[in-house]
Image (cartoon, rainbow, N blue to C red):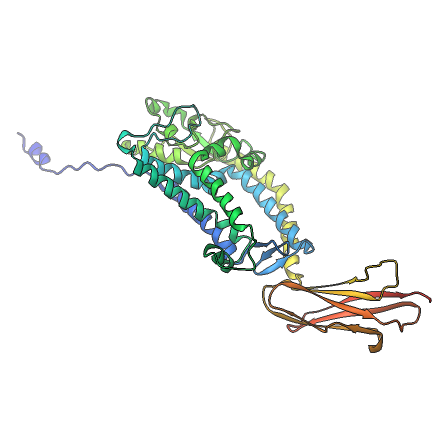
Length: 440
């Protein structure tokens, strides 16, 4: 044997498997977990909640009434413009990356496969094939464990909507069956219905809802263009796909990622991209699938495609940016002009045709903290009116009605006076009232 061959034979050779690029998969998992965490943290932190008793939104422990026009409509205009821009650029990526229903459905699929086998599909989206349970896993203990886990998860998920209507302390009273005046009497019944609906979804419906029944995805389709984010397939390497169906198997919507169109049920989750990368990692080549923004074509220079995509997005933003700016301006002005208290004066006489002698002074606290306000009347002599109380005390949000009685000592004519309210924190408001006294 030649010396050089002998030397080469002594060099150790190790076969190292290529590492597949799975970053997209774990990035999506991070976004899904963050979305679920935000869904809980937003109401628990008091950032946003709905007060069913007052019929008002609660933001940062402050009630937002429909009367707070600029704050309410500025927020929705800003949000709508943002959503249109996002949908125009990334399409239905929300469904694949953030939708809680899809996240729970994926988790339920993985749990079912682990306990009952890889072919244990509850509902087949493309055919009516029956559920195939692995023989080794077809045990009553596995079925029982699957049912218990899905039921417990449904019970926990059903608690999340409660946080949007009640503070955490009230939800804790609900969970521990404690008496709490803040809780509705039928709340346990409503909660049970929520649990059953969620259990039905994660146990049987799952991704069937996403593909065939979700209206929200249809709304997103209305803003897609041919430049919107989509799957791109490298057809020049189609020979590498012969005999491989892994990307289709990885798609939990049961699509062929190589044949997506502008209006289809693809939710841009990217699982097919990760699956294709895993297969081709052994060859050292990238997968045949990737995300793309731009015209749906197999040819064309990258610079031209990018320029077309940017131009399309810029054109769409020319319509949405002014609307978004308007929404931001209204929202900021709404925050600046927000009033923590509200004052109104109404006539309190039951017989509206008679001489008015009583008014109802309605004082409201819109902040979830104790407050004290002092009520006074300017413009009338002390002997011509009487207030049932000059103080309004609040333990939290609420409304106090104080009766104002006008004595029959005023001369005929129109008498203008002010009902003034002042809070301990310096807030002050007055309400002008014109009181008419008819001739006797």
